[in-house]
Length: 175
Image (cartoon, rainbow, N blue to C red; front, side, top):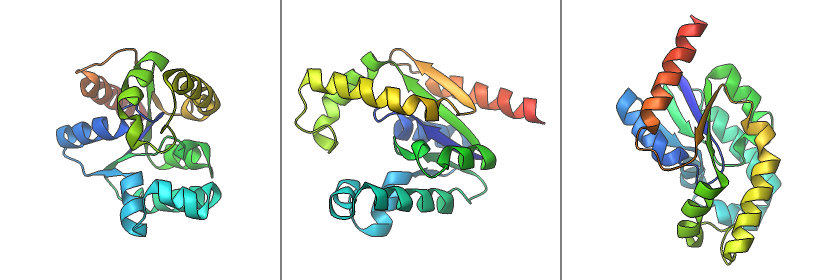
């Protein structure tokens, strides 16, 4: 069973993925970390030196490489579902889960960590809010194709319980 976590940056894909991996006793992989390890370059450096088109091709190839594992939880990059039929592929080979955060929660999380995210560096609070609104609207049609949708309005310590329950229901409906 491959589980793909999708959603906007700051939606908790990596954090939640690690918790799920521990609870389900499955390996965890962060797609961006895997790409950085394989290329020896940060995602920001790849974008800067080779461009977004190159990165998106590399991302799709990398997703399919690590997604071949039989049992794995993969935290995808925020844009991963939006390119190269990645969302369709994830839904064919595994279970995709959209971690859907309210714009307010995304703002709270990204406001704190914007120095570590190249796309957010130097943005004022107002610019950050506008960026979140614009990008989430653009990406929502892709995220919405996920097999499981988890809505987060606030911080939730029970998130992994909700996800595990939905995975169980989803897999039992399919058998």
